[in-house]
Image (cartoon, rainbow, N blue to C red):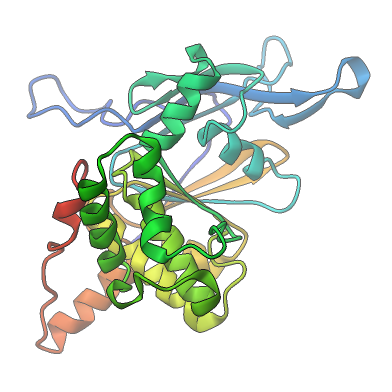
Length: 304
């Protein structure tokens, strides 16, 4: 499959599906993420540091900001070295920080107009976080860990248990529901974190270096799970500095000095991500067609 690279030097990216003629068929769902002219700066005057700046405006010479759409069901890897702005972008997309300028719509919600309590609700209901450090609660079972976001959301106990068990089944940990972190390997702990992230059926999974603390085998296990979740239609944004991890994404953004310098499409938005697609194609050639993606996902509710 050929790759297509797009430059963002000219300003805002056209909305997804903008080239389709009117009346050409059913409208595609709006992007999960819509970012327009986003900037983030620290300091004042000559000491100002632009962590997110985008290209310079040709008329004013000032940063025009980062503009970006991410469609429902896409799998986007954001890459860049230290100081590139990728962590700043992640914090803003995750509603953990606010931009200096610009507009950010998450699943149709303009987060720039929300107070801290409302942002907390957005983080709980619309974003599933997966971090490099697993952030599990000590001496707490895997089942209870996964139930936590549902407890914060006020879901009743019986429903919490059902959905948490379904999420653990999705990551292959049905037999570890009663295990505590010190009884789990690093890879298993991260899989608990993945289950916790997806149990609320969020608008997107936001993964910050999710394999950074894992060995090669556990890395492949976690990436295989994320690939499978994306294949069912879940939107994934993954921050990484590793090319091997970015190979799993359908789209790769590279940041340098607060700007998106390349935007490469590695696979279509709809369907399995590239690595999984190749694996499924290999199975079909070998006479073992891949099965569907059903089962526990249906119990979690909400999005696919």
